Length: 253
Image (tube, rainbow, N blue to C red; front, side, top):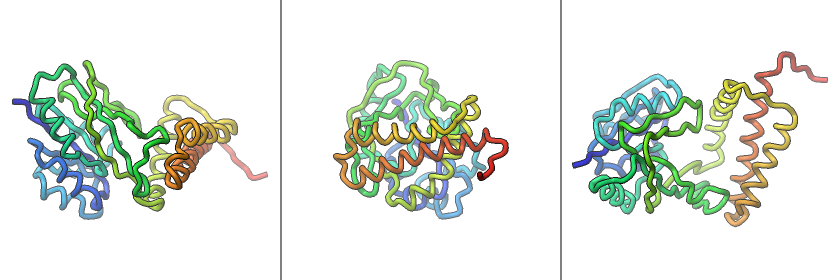
């Protein structure tokens, strides 16, 4: 009979981790890799599993690949701490791996909530994400941020939604903002990319137009507008930091 390991990496996720792990308490194994949280994240996680590893942060991919090495089941489901597996998705996962799966990995639609509202547009839904895979068929790439799973084999698609409770407040959004934009700029720099005035000016504008108009973010009301503006600001900060890295002597004129 096929078994399932769930892997989650955390850093100061006390407000989310309990609901996340409760949603996968049915799994054969839960593995949490915590990056030295200063809140109660690790203590809460230990209520659900004895496989809680405290590891100095080695990058998102590094943390997830470490968790993957600890997994002992045939199948792996990876989650972020602010995500939840619904009962319907749980049943679909169990049914899929218990049968004769045709694929090495499975995508699932993700239903994301921003400022407490389900974002149906902005290019966010269904936003299929590859989360379920055979342990010996996947590993995470080396990107600094927004890492992806490299799958060796065919991929299938599940029907039920994974829920994502991202950024319940603007304050929380900016708590992540500085770190993520710095990592994104470092990744671009590592690939030899450079940024100038055009990138800083036009890329954020393009991001806003794409999300708000082309992806119909205006249909998500005020949260949709705020999300599109913040996303454009994210792009601006990322390229501004990239430009800063390449500048030798910036001087005010």
